Length: 87
Length: 358
Image 1 (cartoon, rainbow over the protein chains, first blue to last red):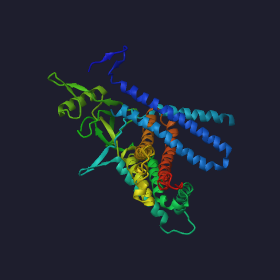
Image 2: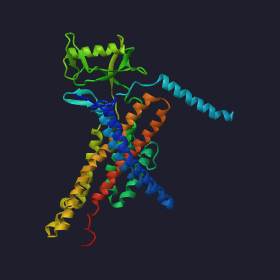
Image 3: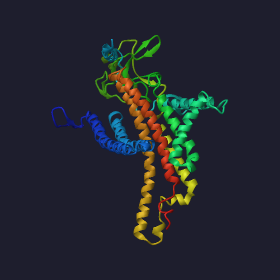
Image 4: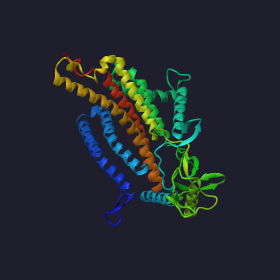
């Protein structure tokens, strides 16, 4: 396989590039869910501060929302692990 | 003495960190995505996650049997514990679903919750991922391992010593007659043997050591993608069943294939309805994927985290990871049960616009 030299140590087609791909997949895919979970918990805290009596309801629904947001980050993690260890 | 307490604790932690880092590190983790086959019964391959799932089922059944044997009106002992758990889940289901549907949803939701929670926690027991059989590197066709660790033999048992070296098979090997051959799963036996000998020589392996891979006998059930996939499929089957048994097949199907308005002549509204229906159908399918990957990703990532942490900093950082895994296992079980419940509630509720008096 022809390797095109970019920099002294990096070539296109370098088999080590897949680790870079794995890291990048996880970094890019973990950013938005983190922001989403932060916003979600922030809003839940606000609602809790306004109405502390509704704590079980707010907490249950917050955890449900966090599960949905975290699932996207988990998809990115699975892709990263597959790139790094399977392919 | 009181002002030395902080100092003593700090010193103890430092000693534990050093002891762990210097003496107790595991070899570099070899992470396997598929569940490994332990034995075969005829054409059926028994994997380690399959064995674990049966152990979990037997454990839950024994627990239920012990709790319901000689029941008394005032509960004591195991019956008390079981009743507390069941009552907590039942209250949760009733608060979310309302009295009318709670009894119908409760068995399925509680089963998902208990099964997923107990199988996640079983993965934290000491025997998991550490005790198994050894398969040598590059030897079998069915399980061709390219990387392995150096395994010593101590008193008849194969033991992986702390900080053992990890060895990789060379990719190509030069045969005695000068040709260069690739080493892969379907290379001839002599090529593979040459590769193994070369790897052993390079790693400095002595006579009573082997290079191989540990195949654990037990592995947490949800680290194999088939486990969460099966649970997700059954969750979808139950949600559809609840919807159809409440509404009838055609009325429930009208939620997804809404061609009523289209056939009556309103073109634009009809197309919008049909399109929304198709989107809902696709969302149902996407739920299968999302359930599977949520549970699989969380538990598999936890297992990888364990392996990496005992490679990097055992004894101290491991406690933090262990606590997080306990928590995550319980939370994922809760989420699986609750999402099944929520989608069931959506399925049995009236379709859009029907009860709004048209």
